[in-house]
Figure 1 (cartoon, rainbow, N blue to C red):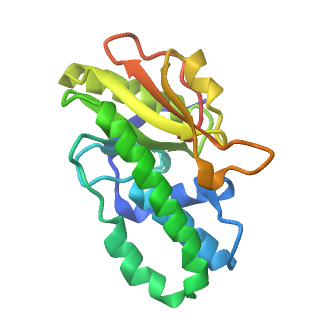
Figure 2: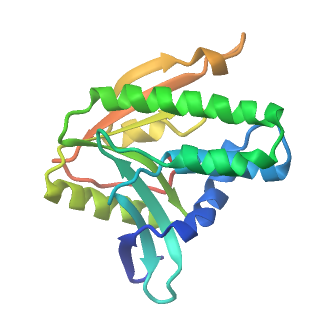
Length: 211
């Protein structure tokens, strides 16, 4: 059970803690352990836009970061490529093929999602929880804040590697289902999904997941 918590602007020095959460899910199949973590960090950085919608949930008792959530508006940019160009030089080019595939995939799905959005809509790029209950807490509080600021709809995209069924169970509307051929195999299609939620309705029932 969580104690007293507070939401603050995300501090970039806490990024390794978020990488720790998502690394088991997003590690590429090739490369050293150092490269795999590098590639996951690149994916995370691609989900952190240069805006004021980057948040962390803090335990007020000890200052521990419990969860983080990142949003993007139409037109927001990241500086992930600047970081990549600097940090990738220490890895062989054949390793970096995996990073290129990640970049192509992320850009495609982000652009497809952003094209559906109006100026008063916002995209949930990523959220991650480091403690049971923290994910639901940060989303509930932030969805309330977004409604109060006048944002009407929230969009997100996910894929078959994630718990995509969760979104339908929690009031999200499926607005696109498609197959991403580069990640598909002869035996299985790699499915991608875009979901939408009306922020004017109550934001209830969130559990700890990673988008």
